[in-house]
Image (cartoon, rainbow, N blue to C red; front, side, top):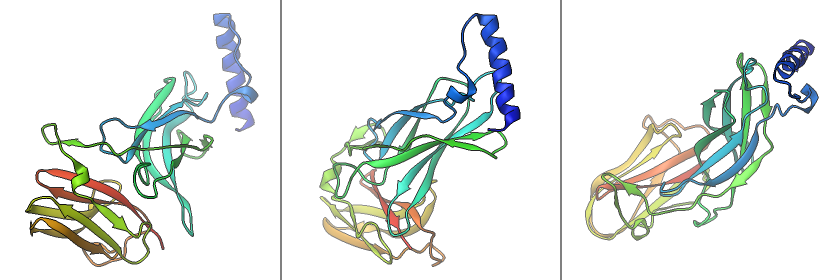
Length: 245
């Protein structure tokens, strides 16, 4: 923090404290980094999401408004680990914030350890940031409720991706308990379709499709987290696959 900003913080805080007759912590004692309070499974989401709640930065309050937004990042392991942007919230000078974000895997699924997250406060001019301490949480695969609210047993469809993380090709397998039209595709974190893998009437039984890490134009997609989604029998199931270099 610059000397000018620090002195401004101290001066105005002192005026407010004097007017209110209360003490205000010094800038050195202020929590300029956001503090993660909890990371819990998002309810009724069908798995794959957690709700992160955090305390604001002390710079996110009237009259400063030095923080313009908060960004949430998830840790992606691998040979070249990195932090994946997952979502953001506008700073509103409120005490706590919450955001639902994706996890890499569910705790109840294969290879589903806790996912690690960081909350970053960004100043209004986007020239300075303050990161929270990393924290972790777990998503749980619940039976999803979709359409008009009719729940169905997703376990009957046995949708899976192997290997995951992937480098060259990932095999997507699923089981249809009865015949029907199925549509399987790959999507990015913004929900945009990357590639359609199949769309056909299929008999009951085990089915498989492969994704080679390319989009509809046959161009390689960047390293990152992607969704595979199966639409069948008026419902949908989804999972995550990590593409490595």
